[in-house]
Image 1: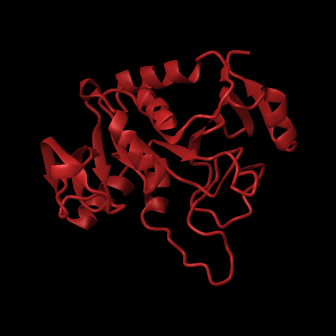
Image 2: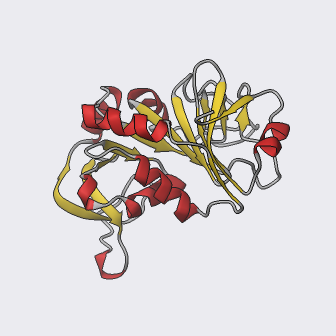
Length: 235
């Protein structure tokens, strides 16, 4: 990662703790992630929620988006007359083409991922541990269809792995764990969690730094995760 990227990432990490009364919408969360991505970065956006981040990356940041089906330099999601059914990302969502975009073989795309050439990837998750383990390809249920895709390559190959997810399931089950109970995608690979209720910075020590809370108090967060140690950013 460039010196500029490292400086921008450090600045984002040391922001003082802040909170709001309401959870973030998916679009609001996508904007937060887009703002945190350093100028000039090469970035992969995973299938699902992460694809919406592309809509909030300003041209001035000169972020280059990569998709594992073989493209560099796509822009926001395509709408209306912009839609070209042959121009899609890995999630089969139509995207726009930016000046300088390039296309290449699937194998070359995975070589970029595995070779450490991506600064950031943003993935969804079923669970993330306090030490950064990622589980996002299977819940382990009998008969469930595994869907690992390129997640293992991205999680380990990117310099930084961010997770974009809801902090709790629709049933209210937590997704931030002391240790994941679902099959792992990668070990110690996640550096940040961006969720509707919290922005969390992870560390191999297992101490989770809380940068932002939305619709949830610090005490409520701790009560719902009694086996995870939290500290407020800037404390």
